[in-house]
Image 1 (spheres, rainbow, N blue to C red):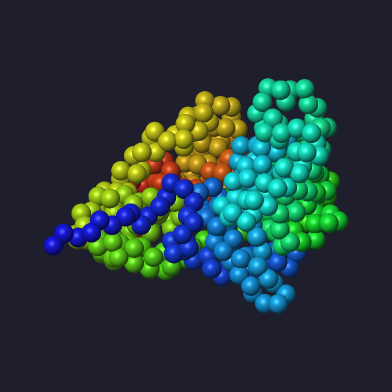
Image 2 (cartoon, rainbow, N blue to C red):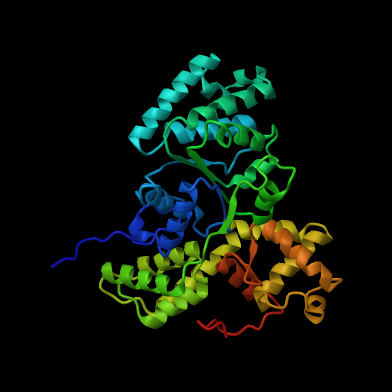
Length: 402
């Protein structure tokens, strides 16, 4: 008897929206949802590719629940700011979030609000988004349009959470977008609206939210996306492999999680690499995982990480220090980054230059700092650096990192 085809259970190239595949975030989603329902805005930080957008999908499900009489269901509108460089671009992102909402009730409410707004201002908002005709508009007119658009957005629901994803992008947006957000969504008439700001560059988020001269200073509770526990990930992987007729050996699962550091995207990607290269009915072995790890590390040679590294290598002394700091972390970990002998071995003119280099790398989203330790965010990038380093201790990789 032939076994029915089974779909790949490991999704790594886009955010997850299936709650059955979102791991270990239930308690945190509940905490954030109750904070937002209590009319406290939240600033959520998490390095790139660690699951912020996936988390917002789970958060939307949690917000849709009725927790008690004082915390009824809330609707969610997500505005993706990843490529915003101007106020017209911001307008376009809000427009897309409104008319493209996945839920018909909110989508139609948004369409009605946009229709009413366009009658009021006398032109089609899509002109602002991309038409050359928009060149005749002034920055002040664009600011007024964005403000009116955000006021219209707050009218789509009586209880609303607006998510501004990759919020730190607005720091380079001219036209004072933070003041417009404050006026439209954080003032009189917006008491039914809470805001979630997500970002992958912690220092930029802090500058926008914690400097007294900024329009939204002190207006959001700071939270960090928690790491997924190793046990939760182990159980998830074990279950998904078994349910798709490709059971995994325990040592294979342990190696997989050690090699990826339980990094959400890399773990799913490596699991997929193992899954797709294992015939149905066969086991995922330690050898399977080791081969998958080698293949993925080798692909870094042609990735954006390699491109960034090449740019840094050709830069000034500050950028050269960033390369040295990356190599130091890859080879030795992030516990004693300011050791004088170690700094000298990696070419720093002074051990005091290590931390500023790491902070600049953090601004690029390549490294982060948790519990007193610096680390390279993407473990596959870190392993690629280690393997090519003349200063690393080149021993075979093991689940214990020995």
